[in-house]
Amino acid sequence: MCPPPPEPTAGSTGPPDRQTLRLLEDQLASDPLVVETRFEPDPYEPRLLQVELNTQRYPDSVTTVRVDIRWFTTGNFSMHYVEQRTDDSIWECRWDRHPNPHNARTHFHEPPTGAEVTDLDLPSLHPLEVYSTVFSAIEQRIESLW
Image (cartoon, rainbow, N blue to C red; front, side):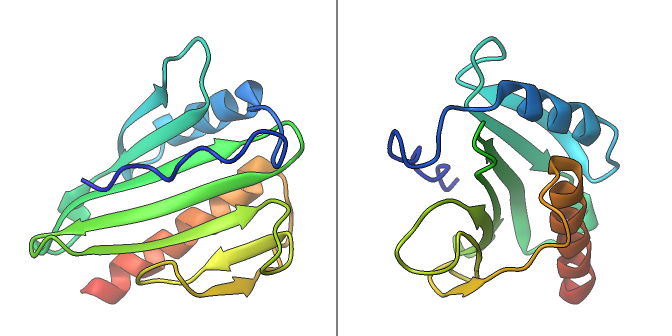
């Protein structure tokens, strides 16, 4: 399985927002697409929320699916969607908000590799609204696979 992206450099995004990570985990726990959530490195000092999605909603060619979520006290975030496929290929994309030299602070790393980056205009930067935007896009991705 593809490892989560490296933790951003200190100072560029700010410290982890544990309260927001827990809020998102509470919301995800009731999402029918979610199989499991876990905090890394642990629930006491979470820096990353890993979300395993239900592969039964996907064609057999998709073996594992996860979303890695980082949220920071500065309002910066990263939601990284990763599909592992039977041919060992990876299909991924990422919704980000952080200072960077390549695009606007809020931007999207386009699938299938996440290498191309475009500016992103979200209707709201509230964590639950961002979650809703991302999971709506994931539902559309599932529909497109069938």
